Amino acid sequence: MDTKLFFGDATAFETPMLAVFAVDLAEAKDAEPIPALLMPPGALQDAAAALLESGEFKAALGEIVVLHAPAGLKAERLLLVGLGKLKDLSLDRMRKGAGTAVRAAKPRKVRSMAIAFPDTSALPGGQIEPSAMLTARALVEGAELAQLDWDTYRSDRKDCSIDSLTLIASEAEPAAIGDLQRGFEEGLIVSSAQNFARSLVNEPGNVLTPTVLGARAKAMCDEAGIKCEVYSSDKLQELKMEAFWAVAKGSAQPPALIVMTYEPKTAPAADAPVFGLVGKGITFDTGGISIKPADGMEKMKYDMAGAAAMIGAMHAIARLKPAAKVIAVVCSAENMPDGKAFKPGDVVTAMSGKTIEIVNTDAEGRLVLADGLHYAKTLGCTHLIDAATLTGACVVALGLLNFGVFSNDEATWEKFMDGLTVSGEKGWRLPCTDDYRDHIKSEIADIMNTGKNRYGGAISAAMFLKEFAGDTPWVHLDIAGCAWDEEKKPWIAYGPSGIAVRSIVEWVRSYSA
Ligand code: BES
Ligand code: ZN
Ligand code: ZN
Image (tube, rainbow, N blue to C red; front, side, top):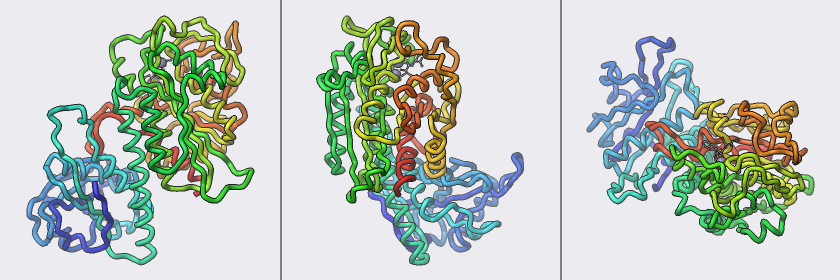
């Protein structure tokens, strides 16, 4: 999609479809909706007036109406997009609104469209949008994310893509123009990174093996101009990554240890933080010898969504160029049952030297991450973040809306949570305090790879990872419930969400923008 920012008058803009946003001014939950356009008085307001008065359009989030040949406008169609109640208006609603506009246009065979930048100044309460820069960014992100559909493997695929999208903002102060431009450009960078992550997660396990994931990461890094090394079995032996190798060795597909490095142009001070992004890249999780039930197992192709989040984050970081060094370590393998597979009862020694009793081979994510986290520290990382589709228990605890956030350091956790207001993603903190250490105590080794019972399974997994983060400030994201959108939404296709890319990028930038 060719996405442009244009400064001018939306009413005079010639386009097959012009999208404008509307909110519901009614405050009480059951009150009759009072829809209002986020546009200054004029031809746009006039064109929509009769519809708004009819009560047919309530401006609920995700609701749309199309008006053909709107009087007084140059657009062939006027698309009204609801953002929900005014009191709930947020950056994320703007993002969803732009997504809804694009997804409304796609099946209508519209190839070129425009979105009018929302103007809240005419509303009671005056200007309320967060900032022009962040709004521009959110609108672009929403529109770009909405463009993708996961029909690449269908032979009856209909091309419904939008070729050109123009975001129309009124000619404002020169300072505001600069802000809008910056937000617009950042939105393009972040959304293309997230879409790249989503496209990786969408790939089936037979296509996206660890080797292929490594090749895709390498190609991305080559294009972005950052360093990428892809290692396999030999390197795992050399580094004594027995925990990672235990998972990998049951598969005919060799593992991939992917190391991507971003260095800022000006070398940071010697004591500046170095960020380590560690991703779980299980390209298919059968459970191994502790095999999973057949029902729903096909979903386990997305067990590499944590890896995709880190590869996506590096895609954005290479272009946003923060003033800090960032190293991503992706541990990718296939978890298979086989004559060579690891078994419950096995004891392995992780790269850090800790011994691990394997109780369940389906708790494989924490094993590959154990070596990934430790390795990131040996590469000089001073701040760690990992993302993993780690536990079903996290899905039980938080549902599909929030990912689990765990941390061993208050300041680091706070920095991460602050970024969520910009990213619009939702994460909820769960504990991993030392009083839970008992969960992973083993009789015969230092630790075991499951909890002693099924209670607090997401916490047991986090406690296991914490052993390998050690004293290094660390945030762990359990994205098992959020990496695949189960429900169809008006603003984004069902399927791979690309969750955590935006939040991880924001976290890194919060130290170094
Ligand atoms: N990949 C799964 C976790 C998962 C579950 C991801 C649902 C996405 C959706 C992970 O490797 C796993 O199987 N975890 C086990 C751990 C258990 C054996 C301690 C689980 O959650 O059941
Ligand atoms: Zn598993
Ligand atoms: Zn898994």
